[in-house]
Length: 218
Image (cartoon, rainbow, N blue to C red; front, side, top):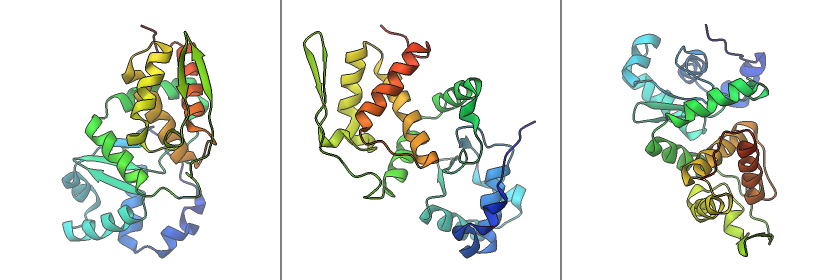
């Protein structure tokens, strides 16, 4: 039986207090439904939402739009992403739950994950995700990996080159670096965390997952 933690301050949240009752209801339903999982990305057809909540298609559209504008929930091709699903549930404190989260993320289609990345990046705060002027060189068999400004951001499109470089640097599959990147990305967004150097952050996550045996070297 699944358990979800909903803080009592839910009703004091500015977004909730300023939203209409349909938005509050739909958001609370998504946070507590039997379909939500640890990573906050799950399959749930809109028709099922309408059936279980009893709201009409028109009412859903109104609430969905408000949740989308506030960057609380994304509905995409039968999938749902709840951005704050992990905020009040400290699943990462347990290694078993981290593994479970990784397994759930691995089942999310790439097109959905890409859509989520675009969705999140469209709300990036310029002060929170500003680039920093830094230059760090890592030597490995005379191959250098240089940090340039475009790497120091959570924008996945700009980090494809970095992902490929790190895969070569650690001699691992590119998909493993991509998965690690997605985990770091969602963790940062759900926790409101920032890195002064996201390249270094990704390297740290990768090295730790290799050490834990979650990534196998080629």
